[in-house]
Image (cartoon, rainbow over all chains, first blue to last red; front, side):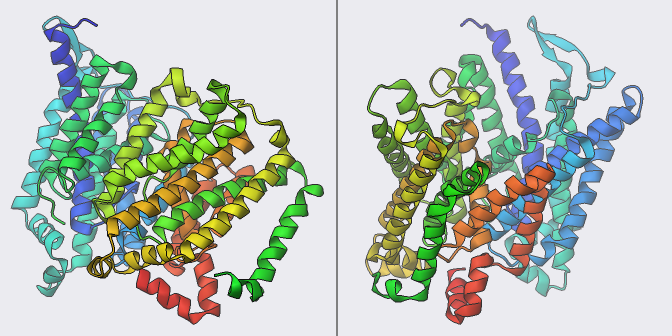
Length: 293
Length: 319
């Protein structure tokens, strides 16, 4: 096994770009967990819908404009799906215990998964990156895909946007308050049901963004939701439930251990993130950063 | 413990069902014999989960791992070693129980959702290793064509083997749940603080419950190998664990036999609806939503509630 500093840096950047994708999805999951207290397994399926929708929209337009339009349209589609699910089903179940909610969201994910199969079929799909982001650049002689660089740039942008939303807008502040004490928010004359709906839709929108962004880097297929959602849950738990910065830290731990695992022991690369998660949970069972629960 | 049961109408019903199931392979087509055997295996798995979830109140999120570990242990014993074949059948559940002891030892320090999440991460660790260790576990291909002892080499004989083991396990589980140990476990579920206050070592009892449940999950894994003669990495994936959870929910958490019904519904749905349409999980999902909305105690719990009003209160208390 020989690798120089160039490979190390490349692998570090690959790890960070993968972490950014995970972060965008996990921030949404964490937001929903924090405000609504719903462990939403369907989040992964919404991410998958985002990726499939990106495929369809990209195909509709010629050239690289399709991808940029898809980046806006696909998450909106996911948001609409989640709004319908929330208003029709979820809003009747907020009083139920977590276990019930977890199984309920699993039922939703089963249904949505089959709907994806009906709409898009069971074949692999792939999306090509827009011309601007195709190819790779050279870092110390090693080549690094441009698209991953784009992901590294967009991750912090999303983080800042979420921070601005939760700290500077009224609805964001209300939803943070609802996360801490939903009864008190209700007493103040705020319609908590709609706050929850908005928070849920925003969380799911982020799943859609993640799905759209991941589309050019993987083959889009049924079952991609299953692998993602388990990682996302573990990330949210090790970061601290409902804490956005925790989601960022957790994603970095997960992404970096995996990418360095690829470098050192490729066969067992997927094992390393789980080891990291187990170590964190044994040392800090409630997560690294403060949880809102 | 059985005195009342032997004289009740329920005993006659149960005994009647088992007699019918025993003579069934004599005239039923092979396909149905196979499906029934699969239902038995799945039932045992679901019941073992319900021991800790329904009766113990633990968030055992990754129960499938112990099922898979039991199955892999026996599969590896039968294919890689030359020990007597029946040794593997004992090793499977024991290895599963030891895995349960190790994972449970870490998990019982935490409660509820955190308990479940730690278990998922530890279980996924095992899944990831099995999934990638091609030279030892066959990786994502699994192990196929596992040789079986000649006694259970035909479908009918393995059917009887599975049915007999299932009955033995059901009796054992019933005895465990009615024993002081089982009652303590249920008391911890209902009020763990009070149990702690009267001097019960809550964690030790929970750990004991996990070991017992994982042992039975291992038995289910062994029976699966006896039926299918193959193992694959999906047995340890978390989706299967949630499917077992669904079976318990469909049948009813707080009933003894509920998970059997849930497992039968799920397997039958996959087999018979799966024949007509590939979208059977859509129907499962819709059924699950209906159950959650209208029958939160599950199908069995609902019927018991109709006949025994007291049961409903027990179920309510459990929440």
